[in-house]
Length: 428
Ligand SMILES: Cc1cc2nc3c(=O)[nH]c(=O)nc-3n(C[C@H](O)[C@H](O)[C@H](O)COP(=O)(O)OP(=O)(O)OC[C@H]3O[C@@H](n4cnc5c(N)ncnc54)[C@H](O)[C@@H]3O)c2cc1C
Image (cartoon, rainbow, N blue to C red; front, side, top):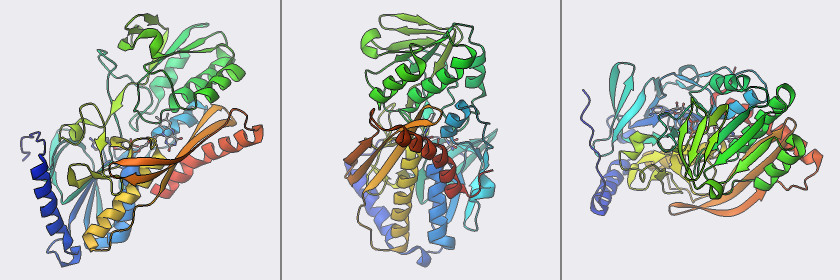
């Protein structure tokens, strides 16, 4: 039986009371409880799967771990779309039940729809079947939800989430007439893997250069700057001549409406028409988290940076792209690091182990500008309250040597597969 969902904001008083109750419940080591504590993990991408793996390894049968792994029980990392755009085959989806089920871990198919932190219950759906899952601690790692641009009816398939096999995006390239225009609609920050849109433009240009060399790519952007901009602009000029044009928000005043079928982008001051429209829509944490009061409207979920506990709900953790992690990139690398921090905090709570000191953490992203040529961006952060304070940043330089750029490309090619193998074991 599913209880009706109610959205309750938490007052400071209730927060204190909840925290006190949680501390009392969790202070005792799990081994002394009648039943092992229930840990519910939502999502089995890099964030959820890493947490499941570490919790199972550390807690064994001292906890019951359930992974709610989405509708498909298979995972295809969205970052592998880069390999697809480079002309490689679509990677085989990873079978989640096979890879994540362990003695203390069960993997359940279903999509979370409504979370009630007060009763510690999560309503989910698997086809026509509704599920109600109860937990002692919840770790949410559902990635991002795609939101329509302005009044566009649908978000479109930009090959941006784990659900997409990219066939729609790849198929649309073949529909581009000779000398036609492909427009990329790019959202404002924050969204998943910000440089990936400009990498995508380069890789589409690379494909078109041989089959449709007079085609044009128009990036209509809802912002005025983007990461590694100087590096991408140098690549547009060096590799693709005048094939790629970027139109910042200051030029058009903001995207208001897309018509995916007609290929039009309406902005405040202009209307852009294209033969093919490739929309990377605005994003946010999924509704079940926002409606539970875990994030500002249309945003991401604030967290305590040293533990990844949700800001106002200490028994809920949010890791990966759904978390508001400031300057830390929305990348698989970040999701893995955050999941390890959250898992460590959970283990310390449940075993009564002394809390570890906050550690500096790092992220790194690579972006191809052409096959065999990649640029990179990364940072080091220190958890401070609800902030991941930036301690250092490193970014490729336009003057970097060809050898260095080739080495970046080698790492960019190897890193996704290596990471997935570490998380899930053998990936194909
Ligand atoms: C084009 C592109 C290139 C990228 N390149 C890189 C890169 O080079 N390096 C890098 O580190 N990162 C890269 N990224 C970013 C990376 O893909 C994401 O940051 C990473 O996947 C986030 O991991 P996550 O676990 O938070 O979310 P996800 O990987 O999205 O996993 C979330 C899982 O939860 C499931 N889920 C969603 N909602 C629900 C629900 N309501 N109930 C149950 N399950 C649900 C989803 O189906 C999914 O399986 C790239 C992304 C894109 C789009």
